[in-house]
Amino acid sequence: MTPLKIDLHIHTKEDSEDEIPYSARELIDEAVSRGFDALAITNHDTLTFSPELGSYADERNLVLIPGVEACIHGKHVLLLNMPFEDDYYTSFEDVLKQKTSNSLVIAPHPYFPGPTSLNGTLEAMPHLFDAVEYSCFHTPRIDFNRQAVRFAQKHRLPVVGNSDAHVLDQLGLAYSLVEAEKTPDAIIQAIKAGRVRPVSPTLPVDRLVEIFFRVVATKRLSFTSIADFTLVGTAFAKRLLLRRQ
Ligand SMILES: [Zn+2]
Ligand SMILES: [Zn+2]
Image (cartoon, rainbow, N blue to C red; front, top):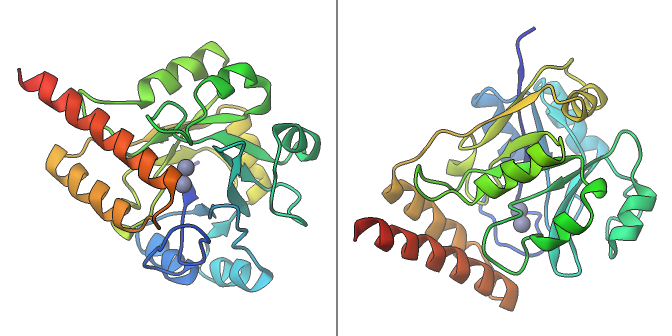
């Protein structure tokens, strides 16, 4: 079976928080042209999914899994295939109560510097999570994903590669290969069973920095977004300087 190429963390123009330059349909077209089999659009506390959008993807042989990137107590959590009558989850207890055997709760960028990363919250409730994210932002020397991989190994959780795309150039910088039939449920069950591996080619540092600043430009000015990106940028810069000494 040829593994499916998937990305479960992507933002689009419909996002309520960031100013993303492409719409959900434009993302779907681009993903199809880049050989993706399945995507989850995970806008901040905003469900971007409808029967029409599902059909649009389906007609292009792309599986669309409904999802959001929820902000709970200031921390980002990816919620996929959850009951989304009310797409705004405000507590981890609520997530635990509402998630089903066909839901996927993923810890995105858990150890990146910044207030929205889960950090200790992940360690306090590993049972809540079905998978841990390997983000596209890394260099051979600087990789905040390492701690996430160690956490996943310790708790026997799968690691998924996600782009967290805010600009289309990010698409494909991190993705997962999943051994599954091409349906939402089969993909989710295969990930839970560990039939998944992240793929994230290392980028030259200057290219990474260029994409990083284009992502920063999509951020509306809020305290958390400024704090997040200042901290990530400073941490990268510090480690780069240390490397050069
Ligand atoms: Zn996030
Ligand atoms: Zn995100």
